[in-house]
Amino acid sequence: MSSPHQSVPPSESSHTTDEGTQTGRPSRPGGLRSASPGRLAAIGAVVLAYLTFVVVGTVQDWSLGTLVGMVVPTAVIVWLLVPRKTNTPTPGVHVIGVPKLAYIGVLVLAFCVFFPFVGWPALLWPLLLLPVIAAWWVTRTHTTVSASGLDLSSMVRRKHLDWSQIKGITIPKRGYVRARLTDDAEVTLPGVGYDRLRELIDASGGRLPDVFASAEAAQIEAARKAREEAERAEADVIDESAATD
Image (cartoon, rainbow, N blue to C red):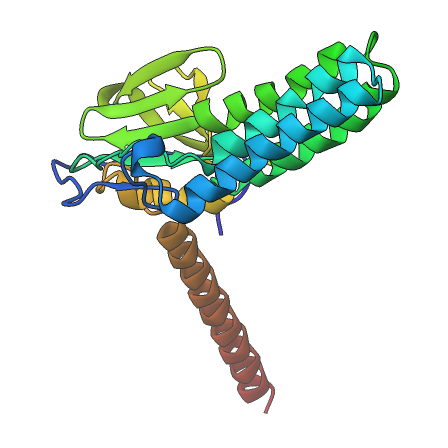
């Protein structure tokens, strides 16, 4: 396979993928109007549970911070239940991002930060921002591959790279794959880890070479040379034996 810090140049190609694809499960038209009766019932149950929590907490004279703090996990659950808007794939466009299952981790994080917040609400209010930041990171972190180049989206900025700017790709020991530019600068490709490198190469439509095939070819060539050297050494031994006789 490819070694760390390997840089490979893109090959010229006018070929583009025929069908647009995008990671994540297929989505339906967003909003409550498109939600199924079962999903609407689940959303209603979550909201009702929160209202019951507020009523009981008010009767039991719970702190205001506890009552308000429960808004975060409740809002996260409702947001996950509401169907996302339809995102029709564009032909020739492929999005590589953080798997949508990461939102389950956001939900778990929301519950984890809630419990210490209840114990010391005055000091731990900033903890409630952690699940919000995590959800923002999952949503924003992705790389879009298209005929025009690569569109990079991180938590704080967006960047476009034309194919003509890309000299190759670098595979670091840790972290996301990087694009090596013609000026030898390196730009991180958000969401593209080593496990998604094959997906990136296929989506490039031949603009990026298949480093896996190149590595396999190199291994075959190395094995061929080693075999030839072994055969040559064996032939030398036979010649020496014949000369001795």
